[in-house]
Length: 629
Image 1: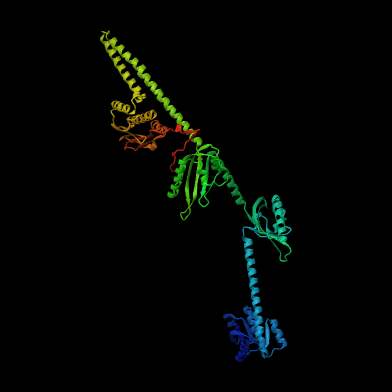
Image 2: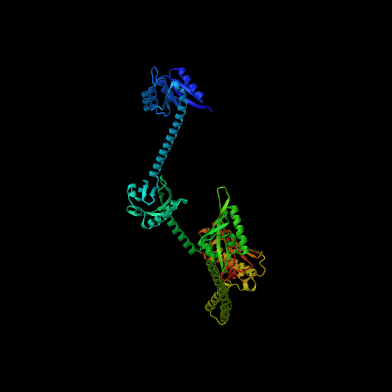
């Protein structure tokens, strides 16, 4: 197999050069060569091209082999240099080898040239590899020093007696002690007393494993180190073990970093989480997160408490849904699907039955989470235990309803007293005054008596009107429709405001509480028209359809801004409260200069809220199902 070689010949004889090349060819070399005769040519060749070996004649007309060797050495190029001459004495050969020539060959024995070149090329390759390894080691050491001197982490080494043998300069930033000061301290001064006991025990066991030849993976330890003029510093250290070059003495190497800030943040986080848990407990509000990938819900401690589940365990959705009644479960599932589809939030009140049989009312709300590609990743939300709130609301409604019932009873009683007792007495007084007039002859007395009779007539009319205003007796006797027809006629007579009355389906029999509520809502609405609207007509429309009674009172008067009206306005608050007590709703629409519309929608049949209580727990309701965000 041919061996290529790049050969620089320092030779003035072309014939001698050909002899050299022929010998090399016979030995299997394919020589790419250049022949030079003086220093300038040699320098240009060395600097302009790469060569594997230099073969130089010892004697040249204007140059010699030793000069050529010196020129090669001046360039710093490390390639074999071999002298070839016809006459080389022992002294000259020794001088050449001392000067740095790698070999010398007699022209009479050129058969030695190829083996010498082959040998020197191998040795040159060894030297080149050594230089590369040395350079790599130097580069590695330089990079290590750069890293060790500038890294925030502290790099250290300790022998098998746990005495520090090396520590990086960054130890000063960590402890306030220099490298030299730290290396002069025993380990029990570098570490706090409690940390030293723990670290020493761990490292002794670790080194014993290494000495026994058992594999020992790196270990991570957290401990505290001392600091000059300050409290201890919390650190984390990754430690690995090995043997020294003689493979006899074990040692440990560690990389240590300051984790004081991390520990402070962890402590703050723990305090924050504890505060959050306490706040959730007090507010009875828990948070949860559903992971679409695992189909598990991770909940706060309060959610587990509300649902009566063991704490700190992920829960499958079915475990929650199994506690929700069927109708609410279906509604909740549909709302969640809509939330995912429309990327909106949802909120809903419903009842749950826990495993121990107790019942609670909760408000749940949440929203969907998506990744950057728009894929669903999960849901997040809260659960609020509103059982006590619902109980209080139910009790308040019951109390309010009872208050209105008592009020209606009192009105009925006062109206009856005014009509029966006071009215009858006034009528008797009127008759007596008329009878008295028959016996009076004095004209002045007759005039005075006539004036008294007129005043008595007015009082009778006022008492009658007050009695009907407090509680029209015909409301109980004849029902809603006849009472309203009479009331509108009387209203127009008293106020000169015409009432345009339309009705549909009102001639049927209605529950007493519904009849009273509808009448009072209309009565209050018309009172407001008289006080504020400044109109000569008003429209009233009542419809009973699909078990729902709708009252609509509207005018084209002055109007007002509902947002500027106090929430405690007695008239409007009474209208809303009467509707709410019957599980209905009332709305007031108005704007300055655009009139006012009062609309109340009341259920005709069905249970009232107070009748839906089950052991103080409000039954499932669709109330509050709108997005609560």
